[in-house]
Length: 221
Ligand code: BEZ
Image 1 (tube, rainbow, N blue to C red):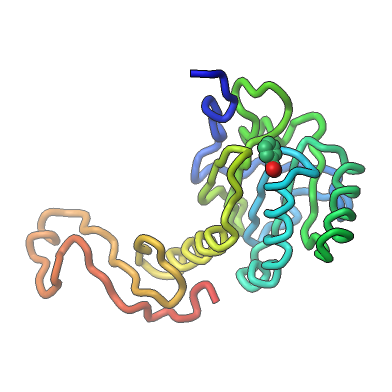
Image 2: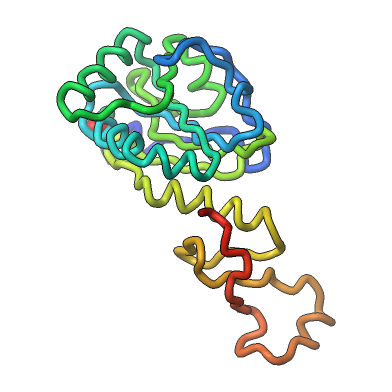
């Protein structure tokens, strides 16, 4: 097999449930700390490099969806190893070529302090380009989910929104969300935790897959 950084990528030493490491950095919207966002959900995402096609398509789609993220009380924070001046040039070029104003801060990480803390760099990467890593951070600063894609594959904005909505839904009441769940869809009851409950279960078509209409229609809206 040929050497390929993506094949050997390790997405993050950080696990679901870990505190998201705080950082202070320059961004296209001024100096910022990650902890400035405490009390809001944060989608922290790395991109391999400025002025590249997949990353440009993501920035356009994320900016166009900014009101949908705001409706979920979710801030977007982008990061890459490129310099602040590169970020500013790219943001300006996206505006000029596509008429889209990038709606979120783009953090510079030239020393790779953030990239290393979050495991955004492939283990044997030939250069400093980060993976397409995404961290879903809750209002208490806890990592609740993460995604890791190779540089060549763009993320789905719909999926990012869906995961945030699903995390918010399961936080509200004791339900779990099935495959492809979207706000308003049926939810599932959590699995039984003991034999007595499992043997006593009655009245459902399938005792280990108990769907219910979602009573909480506000979730994720
Ligand atoms: C891109 O965003 O298009 C890209 C970046 C790095 C490597 C390959 C593609």
